[in-house]
Length: 279
Image (cartoon, rainbow, N blue to C red; front, top):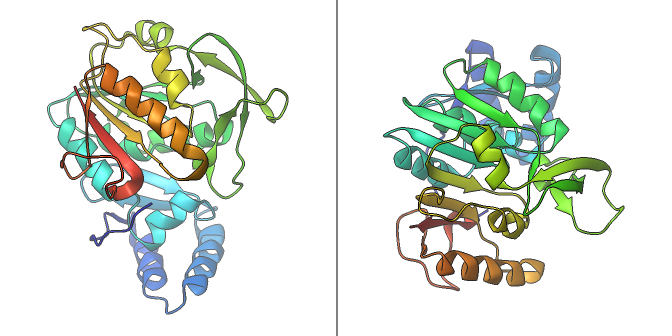
C-alpha cells in the first residue's frame, strides 16, 4: 500500500478503547505499539478491539491481523479508496463488495442512507468476523454470499497464505494445493438470486482472482457496474494479470482513474494500489 498523510479515520469505540489507542499511537517504538495492543486487547476486549469510523460504521478488529493493526495503530486502511467509495455511493444504490473480508467497506459504505450491499467472500475466518461486525451495524442492509466469484460454477481450492493477513486469502489455481474447498459462482447467477438491482459500485479485491470474476459478470447495459474500484499491482508476478485486467475493462469501455480522481496512465504513481474504473 502506498502511504499518504491523513488524519486518523478510525477511533476507539468506548472510553477503554480510546485510551488504549491513544497510548498505542503515541508509543515511541512500533514493536512496543504492537505488543501493547495485543496484550491489552486480549485481556480487556476478548481479542477484538472495538473501533468506530468518523463518518459511521463500527468494527471489532483482530489487532494481530495486518488490516486490524493498521486501523488501530495508524487509524486508517486505504482511506482514499474508502472515501471515494463513500462519495460514489452517497446517493444510495447497490454496492457489491467482492472480497469483503471482515467488513471494512461493507460496514462503512453500507451505513450510508439508501445503500444496499452484497458482500462476497469464501473465507470462513473472514466471514466469521464479518457476521460479528454486522451485528454492530444493524442499519446496514447486507446480503452475504459465502462463495468465490468465478467464471463458472464449481468447487475451487482456497487458501490464506498470510497467517496474519486475512486479506491474502485467494483461490489457488494448482489443484490440491489449497486447504479449503469453497464453491465458485459467476455473478450472473449470484446477482439475480440476491435480487440485486443495477450495481452502482463494484469494489473487487480478490488477490488475482479478478479476471475469473469479471469473465463471469453480466456486461449488458442493465448488468454492468457504473463504477469499479479494483486492486492494481504491476510488479513481479502481478504484471501479466494487471495487463489482462486492463485489457478487459478497456474493452468494456471503462476508463481508469486514480482514487484521487486523476486520469491514470500505465506506470504512473498509484495511490493505495487501487484503480477507479469509470464507465
